[in-house]
Length: 165
Image 1 (cartoon, rainbow, N blue to C red):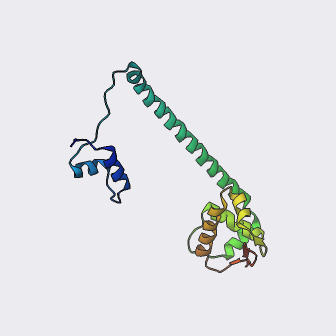
Image 2: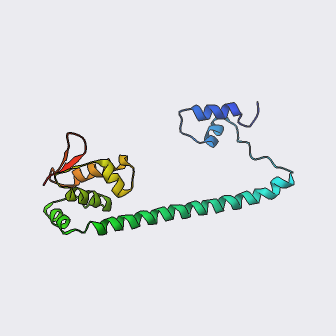
Image 3: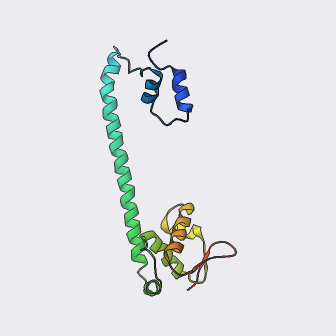
């Protein structure tokens, strides 16, 4: 019997329902993990350092991309808030009583409902305004319903929502 985990034992660990690490699983069986084998190939020895440099550069570029997306979303939220500074929206919002403060996107959703008061508003329209997938819009509508004390959002018979105040 070898002192290292076999491929079959690793497969058993992956399919097991126990939530333990591979190292813990190896200890449980009284075995150890096989460490990386030493190589005598010049290419592998030289390229090992290059791989590390490449992955760190790749991680930095991914972080930069995430930061760019985050900045764009913040700018978009600020733009939405600037566009919703309509006087009628401010009036309606000051008649409304909220249990909790609204987020920027919830504010934008409410502003769109106020603009289309008494008309059917569909989730796909809100998704286009917020530039998010339609599935996420339902979360904001649900949050609006829970945060606003009055029952002002009603389901339309043909789908969508109607703002009544």
